[in-house]
Length: 214
Length: 214
Image (cartoon, rainbow over all chains, first blue to last red; front, top):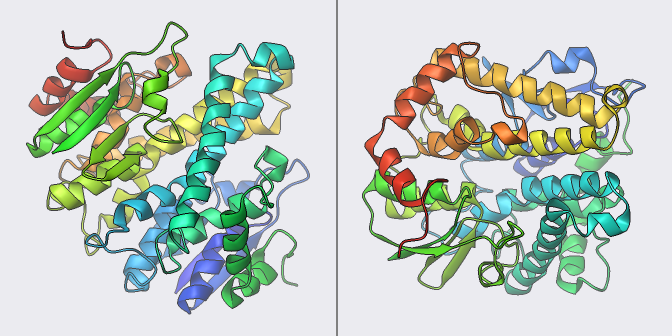
């Protein structure tokens, strides 16, 4: 049985969501952040990179959301939430599986490069300019994709949606756009996503407002 | 035939390398950076995210290295440089396909959060502390993996190596570790990588010291 090492208030809630979507059994191990908001030493000891989520599957200890989600879908979910190589949606699926990494890196770098200088100086900083353009462009691509397909991986819900939803619900503090009427396709999509029973169950178990079971 | 839209001095050289490894025909379209080191408007018009590399394959315009490399390997290379789902190396392959995104995000955020404050203050910044730990841990994981397997995806060279090499050869300016005797497994691995004829050919065509063909 897969063990999901869950760090409270982190993106590791998406692994719980995936397990609920696939109807797979799992054991949840909960770790609270320290008063400094960092992961505790016990969590960091699980994998050298110290990122959340981490899973254990027999002898395998695995980190990195994108990798974990694809691994579980393919090895334990019969590829049911992955898009097959032969599908016309395959390149889109691969692209949107990376949206999470791409958007978060761009938001973080944009914010850090802005904080380093006054607002006028930031506009002269090529890193800030590049990342601002990239963030804006990622939302253009997102809104366009969701005008062409109901889900990021095509007509059906897939791992690409599991990878991406957190970026639309929980990253306003990092400078992510609020999904409102200025992004109509994305807004309708997000409504479909958060209405899913497996999403709601996972958020109750491990979402940002959940807490360690007694 | 695939068109590789190559931005000079960028990670898009890895697509040329992949095409050379697979022995596939391609058309190279070269774009020089502007005097501000940013991608030119003509390049940014290819895809909303404006990242390099970008490929065209018939009607498809695709961005994002990780996605492009897997797409070309699976759709045009018979999966020859991918690791199959049933292989014991499959989870490792998935993990190391993300090393490029993970290391670069951590290096960039670390540098930006350090630049924002004096060195002593950086040690009190949870983002700086987290990213410093993450960068250090990624090299621990890398050195460990290359003590277990000749290549990141297992005994054989794969797309995971194509995704990762740039991080070991070309990112010292961003704070990446120099691959020296302190990383013996990684050093021996990098020697194997840069000795490959397809790597050398691709670097001559599109590497950081190459320039736009006349």
